[in-house]
Amino acid sequence: MGDWDPAGAAATRRRRATLTAGRTASLQPVNGRSPAACDSSVTADVCANDGQRRRDRSVETVRPKTRSEKKKQRRNDLGDRMSCHKTQESLLTSTSGFNNYRGVLNWCVVMLVLSNARLFLENLLRYGVLVDPVQVISLFLNDPYSWPAACLVIVSNVFIVVALYTERQLSKGSFSELVGFLVHCINFALMLTFPAAVVLLVPSVTPVGGAFVLGSYTILFLKLYSYKDVNLWCRELSTVKAKKLSRSLSCPSAQTLNGGDRKVCYPGNLTIRDMYYFVFAPTLCYELNFPRSSTIRMSFLLRRLFEMLFFIQLLVGLTQQDMDLSRMTERLLRLAVPNHLLWLIFFYWFFHSSMNFTAELLRFGDRQFYKDWWNSETVTYFWQNWNIPVHKWCLRHFYKPLLRRGFSKIISQSAVFFLSAFFHEYLVSVPLRMFRLWAFTGMMAQLPLAWFVGNFLRGNYGNAAVWMSLIIGQPFAVLMYVHDYYVLHYREEAQ
Image (cartoon, rainbow, N blue to C red; front, side, top):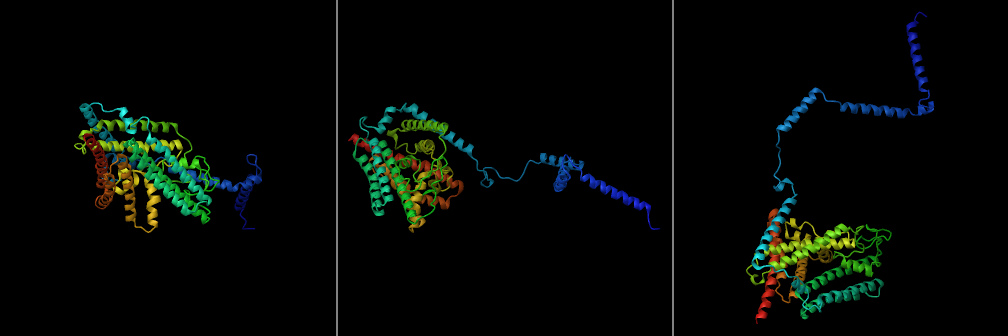
């Protein structure tokens, strides 16, 4: 009893009363909730308190800086104002990493146009206006009642139907693979020889009309060859009962294309509609299901149509005005730059305006008709990127098959250049009815040129060499043909 402390007992009673009051308060309803509900929200309250503590700490981090920190910041700002230099390369240095030369390209185009405008005006003042719309029509027609070039284009439908019929018979098993191969070979041989024979034997076919016809038949030849190959691959995969084919060969029947069109599988693609869509599509490589755009953009279509009409008129006008045929030999090199300008305009008109117009009209999705060939540092890169449809065809149907048959890369590349040289000569010599082999020689000369540029020139020097070959090489060969053609005909008239 002597050890009992009244003050300590009183403190103990006060602590118990405090704990009991706190416990009772925690069991009271809060905001209309029952004590059980409040008890079950303990975890949420803890999380809320923890989140509040985090927010408090974050507020502390964005509190105004102290006086010393402000002074340090002012010193840094003053140092930035006083220091305006850092280690960096000049933009035109190759190691700077800068590659946006759009303004330089525009400047070059403006200078090229202005320089050729001067020559055009000089020619205009010296020789007068030489542009004649009637002469343009005469380039295609000698006789207004005889249209042999148009008739040949219409006859090309026969070869299209023969190719489609052959593939249908092969899909049904009515033709063996050997018979189908022979029919296709005969069809392809006639496609190249028949129009050439007509152009050579019919006097009313003009050089321009003949070039147009042979160009159309050459494009059709490449298309139908691809059509034959792809359908052959489909049959080969069908025979091994492949469950899933690649996108370019087959597809699940339930899927749809980007434009909402239903995908087709072999042999459902062997229809007149599918065949003629491929014939008019701006590509040389056949697929069962082409990528399609969802709609036709009328504003885009009209812009391309305007460009087509404008640039074809510009091409015709510049060609007629600058062709002083009596002085052709003297002006071969002088006309190289204007002729190169015509080549550039033709490239833009055909590969950008015309092919985009056709693609938009057919809702054809793949619009990569060319790449950045103007940046070519090797001749090989140029030929791979300036005409993508032809490059894809050569790669898919000629170069890779040669590699699979065991030929080396050098032989396969040489074969591709040889094939290209043949068609270049075919498209020039036959319409002109003379064989000078300028185009063939020029194309085959690309092989040693590609080797030299690729091994001895790099970067800007290689790009300059490619541009020199374009400015001097190709226009020079064209001018040689034109010169020889008119010299030949003038001599015949003189005799």
